[in-house]
Structure formats: C-alpha cells, structure tokens
Length: 613
Image (cartoon, rainbow, N blue to C red; front, side, top):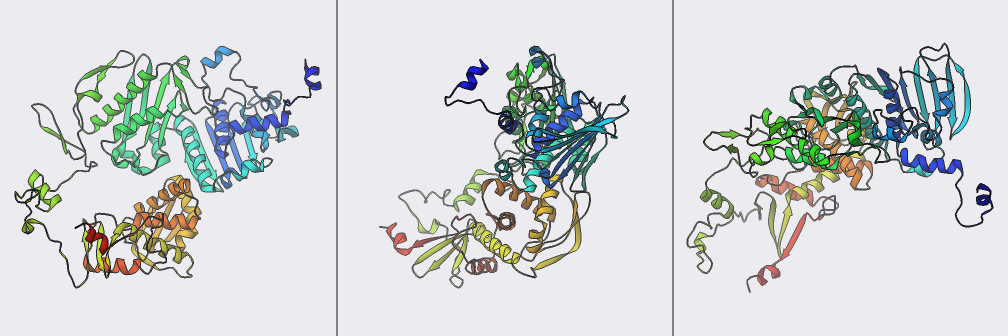
C-alpha cells in the first residue's frame, strides 16, 4: 500500500514529518503562554512541591520551568519528545477517567518543533542526570550531566523557524499578561505547591505553599483579605468550593475570573454569564468581580478532551452544574449582606438549598430596599447606585420637565407662555449649559451645541500628545507622594509605558514588589485618587490595544483623556465653560474627539426658523 502511495502522481501528497509537526504545533502552541501552560502541567504532574518559572522578553527569548518532581530516566527522555507518547493514559477508557493535567503527549513534541529546547532531568534514585537538547525536533545533544533532582526545561527563541508566527505575537505587555494569567491559574489550583515567577531578573511572585485564601491575597494584593467571601456546598454529584469577592472590589477589566474542575482551569461561557449576572445587582455593567470556584466531580462525569488547548470542558449534567452554581453564589452574597432567603429548591444531589432565583426580585436600579411581607425593609449594600434626590412623583416631574408637566395650563392646545421655564440666559456671555451635558452658544447665523465631555477629551488628548514632544512636560508635584501597589500585570504594563507616561507629565518612581511612588501628575489633571487614575489609564490602554491600531503614545493619551475629562452631568460655572470653549478652539481638530466623534453640532438659524413654519 505504501509503495502504491509513493508511485501516486495525483494532487494529494503525504506531508513530511517536519511540516506535519509544525502544523500540529500551531494547534497546541499559539503564543508564549501556551508553552508556560504545558510546562507547568508537566511540572505539577511530576509531583513537585516547588516550581520556578523564568521569563525573558515576555517569553520570546526564554521560557524556563524548573521543578523538583520525580524526574525522568534516560530511556524516557527521547520518548517524551515523540508525538502522542505519554505516561498519563494507556487505553481508550483512560480518556474518560483523566486525573492528570496533561494526557495527550503532544506538548514537548509541539514545543520542540518551533523552538530550541534544553531539558535537564534527574530521578531521585539516580546518581547522574542527563541533558537533552533539541532544535526544531532535531536532536543536537544528549549526554550525562550533573543536575539537581527534578526537571528543568528551557525553551529559547520561540517560533525562530516560523517567522510568520513570530510576527503575529502581540506586544511584550500583552504576551506577558497572558503568561501571568496562566501562572495565576496554576498557582490558584495548586496552593499546596510553592511557586516562583521571575521576569527579566525581576521577582514577580514568590508564593509559599498555604491555604487558598492566603494564595489569593499574595497574588492579587492585601486589599482582598477582608473582602473574600467563602463558598462551599457539597452534593452527591458535584462539590463546589472557593471564594467570591465583595462587589465593592469589582474592577473595570476582566482577567480575575477563575473556574477549575478537578483542579484543571477551564472556560465555561454560561457559568461566567450566571455569576456576572448575579453580581449585576451590585455592580456597574462594565465592572467584573474576582472569583475562584473549584468543581470537584467524578472524572467520568466531565470530558476535558473537547478543546485543542483543553480550555473548555463538557459536564455530563450541564443543567445541574449551572443551576447549582447560580444558587450557591447567590446564597454566599446574600448571606454576606443579610438578604433573606425565600423559597426552597433541590440541589443536583438532592440536598435542599434556598431557591434564590424565584424567592424575590432585587427590583429596578432605582430601588433602595427589599421589602418582605410583614417585615422591615432590607437595605442594599452601599455599592448600589440609587437616586437620593426628591422622592415624590410631583417633584421629580417638576425636575425633569421644569414644572410644565404639573401645570394644568400646560396641556397641548392650551399653551400658557408664563408656564414654560425660561433658560438662565446671560446675554453678556452668550452661552449656557443644558442638562449639565451640553454648552449652547449663539452665532451670527445660528447656534452651536458643544458636548462638554467630548470637547474636554479632545483638549486633554492633544495636550498629552504635545507633552510627549516637549523637553520639559508640565507637572504639578504632590505634597504627599503616594505609594501604590499594583497587580503584577498592571505593574508590568506600567513599566513598559513608563517613558511615555513620564513625558505626559507624570512623575512616577518604579519600586520593587509591584509598587510605584507617584510624585507628580500632569498640570491639567485634577489631583486626588492617583491610584484610580493610573489603574484606569492602564486598563483603558489594554482595551484600546484590542480595539484600535494606534501608536502607544496615542493610546496612552486617549486613555488619559477618557479618564480625566469632564464627565457628562457635571455642572460648570461661567468661567469653566468659557475656558473650555477657548481651549477647544485652540486645538488642531476642535470639531472631533480623539475617536472622530463630533464635539460640536451647528444648527443654522434657517433650520430653527423652519421648525416654526
């Protein structure tokens, strides 16, 4: 049969092993974080209690994972680089009872196909270890070596032989952020293992073994300590445990939502939707809370082999798992805020629990309390936004319609000019504010309406860009410098953008331990809450990176403009409006905001007159 294939002259050809290996590697190794994940999985499966990860240039130059696990024998070393060679499974039925992180036997073959790999390993009982070097699946060296117990895998020059793949890698900050998430997943799922992460000689994490809540605080910061809410429920089908967080700690960005099944990180769109939907009662639509939930379930009831990167899983009883998740998360939050439980339900295993879905409704966003029949009202947490202004319907109507709606003379067909509210128009200045959102001014041929938020965004954006070209940017020094502790991903991004941010007028000194000291801010930025300002700029920069193709300095300037500009709904006095208009017309592009949305709308007098014909 093989000879017949060799003689075949048709269009279909069998690919060479080298080419097929590179194609297969593309399915498993998509970016540096994919390498980190596979190497961490192997280190965890080796039984190690200490794992060290070393990164250089966001994984482009070096990814090294060192563990003190069981190590490998001389005979196993070459085999681990063969495709579909593994110690984790041996027959088809093993696929339905997987209890290890890795099992396909693809990782090392895929990694070595697109990089230069050096493996050093030694078993505890052996006197001598071995060093094995392979480049692009070609063995370069295999010899005995004096090495420590365990295994060290160093992956250098990722995609060196696939330039097109290397060209598609994102910025160092983006790639390192993916590595951080992968590392955090492994560290959270294995709190009994100590982990280290070193990036470009900087120690990012040094996590001793300990309980899960301690590991969360060490990864995400001390501010999480008092805000973690434990979750734990057991049934005959699935046990769910872990932590959710107080809604007040929700952030503007995703990335701190973790799900694990049998200690394996996984992504489940519907479970994420359920949890975020529960939190919507307390947080804004663009905020995302931290949570780390662990599902302990019979391996035969979950299929982890449904995704090339093993990110998605399929439960045997999806409906029960999702319903159980909804109930226990809602129960944990309700108990935290002393919200009453009404109604009963059945868990997947037959255990009774509060049916929080149908017991009551939190009400609309304007409600401030929950009323039980015959009981007192239960106040919402302070995190909920509600209108504290006048509460009666007539006064609210007066505020919205200026008294017009409550006047019996103000009905259609019976106009009374005395009942129509007159704007506070000062002819001397020629402009006024509408609904605390727009500035209106007359011209010789009509009037123009300025969006105060968009206009100020254009002003800050242009000033920030001009500052990057200035030798001495304008900075206002803080009377009391602020020391801020960032998350590891935010601090990594801050380091990358530090030269640009400094040129825009910030005075920031980078310290060790993911901390920075803010000494000054741009002269046009209002002082106060510098932590929130910087965190928002970093987050919006990340969002813009995934949406727009702009230069780094343009994205930073736009992020700063979005955060620092005058919000819609802010009352401005005469001087503030006049200054805003003067600054807007001094801009190079006064008629558009940085995203090319209009800042000014002109209405000619002819159009206004036509409305009265």
